[in-house]
Length: 516
Image 1: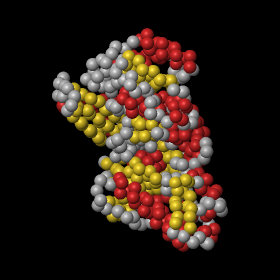
Image 2: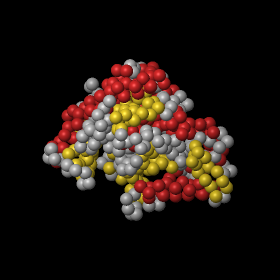
Image 3: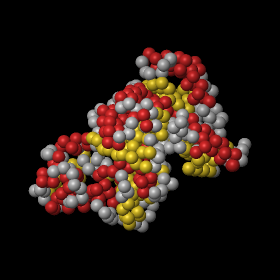
């Protein structure tokens, strides 16, 4: 028995699964205190299924806590950014292009010290322990308890990051330290940014995950608790505390994995219409296609793995305004207040849900409450929704040919049965809770992204080394060793660098080892 939960802006969805069989599902409004909504979903699904809490072997939760903290610049810890790269990287200091609100929230504690490596492992300059001790003194006097350490080309040679972290930990007992080689990819600035964000989220991660543990325990469940991350795999709580940035965009990823599971389609377009937003992404081999460019989070450029997803502000709770044929839908939404404020629930606000009921696409609430709604407004709103979502699908497609689309999410009733540019609308059973199903079926993964010099080893040896490292990371994260397999390989020759260099990125996944 696995219990998957996904927290959205409007609803918290839960699903109980036994193997590949869906035992029970439920959808509850998200609460201001997210843990309360999770608790309500747990109690409701256990009660409706008749399953004993003792039968649940694992609980998987997808949360937007950490993304929201960055976007809103709230609940972030003051963080020191220590870069090892002087004198080569002095021209652009850490956090140089960050939005002012985030720079202020983190305190602006930045340091560039000697150190770093070239792509082939040669030193830029020797690490200076005394310099790092002076930096540690400054950090301690400022009362900063989170530190991000980034070294030039640390994915190739992590020795200086490791040594620097050891010195800082010795000088600053109890400080949380994030290392860039464990978080981002090759590019320095974007990897550094991702590491700083991760460090700033450390204290919040402890509070949030403690709350999740408490609410699961109150429900009588003694099973292992996991957090979903943005590549469709799971983090155990220890990993989630260390790498909270890995949860960014996990909601759309859960929906896409759930869509693949429910439909049996492993390659195609997924349209996930929730209560607040619509997310459109591409499935490749049953996993979301990863973004190939820099991803911005709260205005900060990052390069850690993220799904290639386009979002627009249209969902079941979206506000509808205008009259006649001049109608707008979203981007603002009632969110979790939908069941209080929408007209079909006795409220004053006209929403996309009211439009769906008036148009005969849904049967919820009190239809009489919208009896006087102008038919022109209803049709104009539905046309606006369909055209905006169709345009987003076109932006994600790789050709102009119509494609089949898997449609999931409770708000997908807004689309009806056809969409411009879409050849077939696949709406599988339990489509409304695909996100929670994606969380429940998630596997455990490990990834490596390194530059290898083929002067000292053959190509196959480099691939074998990357495969071994990715597999080991998956097993350490909790995967059953016998089930781990490589699902993605990216090999990019670097012709303008000496020593016949090649960049290899490899991802391995395996089934969760519940016996552990």
